Length: 231
Ligand code: OAD
Image 1 (cartoon, rainbow, N blue to C red):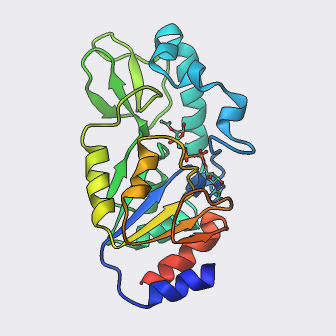
Image 2 (image 1 turned 45 degrees about the vertical axis):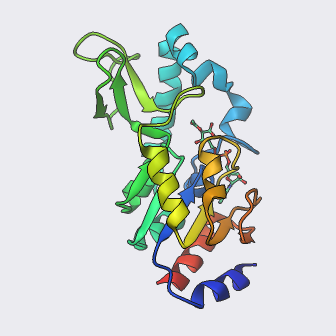
């Protein structure tokens, strides 16, 4: 399937490229995915850690889990897939990931559908700010005294304003869509793939979306080859 996809890519020039990614693109950096073997949702219950109710019940528990993930990602490095995507400077990256590894690899044009582990939001003022370093006290608080929460989307919450609409518009009008490392089960993000009408290529050891080409391979192996054919 990889060779067929490479042949198809080389047949013409692709102008409007969207790269849609999920946790699998960071798996080769050692960041656990959510589902499947070793997935976070095998060991942790989402409703205890990634919902507004969980945070209201026990903010320290939720923050301990986020501090663990932030530390893990801080110590991880972007892999060959992130770097290849970043070299495609005409592409828009639409990611479900909160790990900021696309930005660290050098991608500039990114829509973070589910927020970022490295931003926090004041629960009272709703202002957001970057927060790269570990917090001295858990749960962290804003200067106003209210609790800070991770600026990520939890189950039952809306996506950041405008993010879904902008991503949907870009995917609808893209001539090439690369879908990398997502199980495609969490909506509304998962619904974006179905909006695309051009050529679509999925890279995933266990392909799960309805793309024209499904390459059953790890992101770090196949993505650089696909990107090279696009240069
Ligand atoms: P999942 O954990 O659901 O799926 C990860 C996908 O990556 C699976 O399809 C794996 O087969 C694939 N995969 C594993 N290793 C890979 C590799 N080396 N290269 C390429 N693919 C690989 O992650 P997402 O689809 O991103 O939501 O999950 C969607 C959302 O569910 C997340 O954004 C998060 C989670 O709950 C929120 O936090 C709101």
